Length: 309
Image (cartoon, rainbow, N blue to C red; front, side):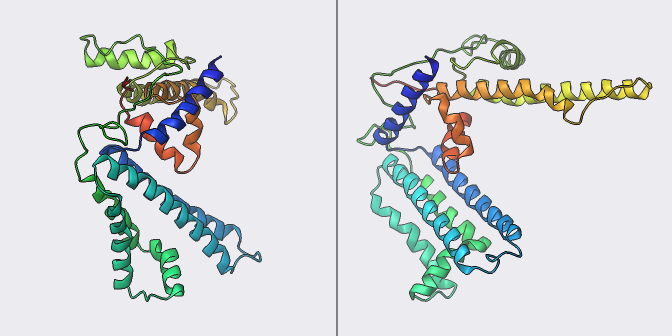
């Protein structure tokens, strides 16, 4: 039953991505930052591949680098157009403004001495991000599109402020926290309550919801709590060994302690996704390049979902 609901909600999420064609400032900036980090990691991976293929027939293959970086740039351009189009829709601007990005990049490339031959353009397109000024210039231009204000009213592309509009919800999860954010409680009580929920009350709850504040408090607080537990366990074992008591613990023995909080963090993330109106299946997207930008934003920043009838 749970899996059926999650699959149904996942299908609805895909439809919502088609219906809602707007993206707010924070989400857009997070997307630009995610694209920059993703490309940087891709270059690091290529450096690792170069080391791994040393001594093989592919060591001096120029085609390998062209294929790798060519595909990387194409994927990056598609992802950039995806978020930039939604950002322009959000601020009510014409999509023709997207042409400013290639113009800005071409101006830098021409300044570097690029000619307008196919060979020069292709080599510059592939190698430009090997230089820090070219790497950051591209993302600086993209980030500038976060400056215009969002259109305050809803338009044909969706609602303002990144709100979600979709009727006939298949499933709506209820809040599953024992701590209510509406109650007049102190900060210390709220923090302790969130940590208690994550580690002891709801470590296996995958059907509830968790607000963004509860997620942050639970994530950071639980990590600090488990660090203390780990330190205490190591101290006790060290004391026993110092007293000459024979005790064998394998190297991975202390890692067993982390299984419990790891499960709690996964279920907390699923509840956070529910709170942002995403299926818990999106948790797998954290391990998929570019999709993890979308999922991480909903985990870390997206407000609780809002239904518009």
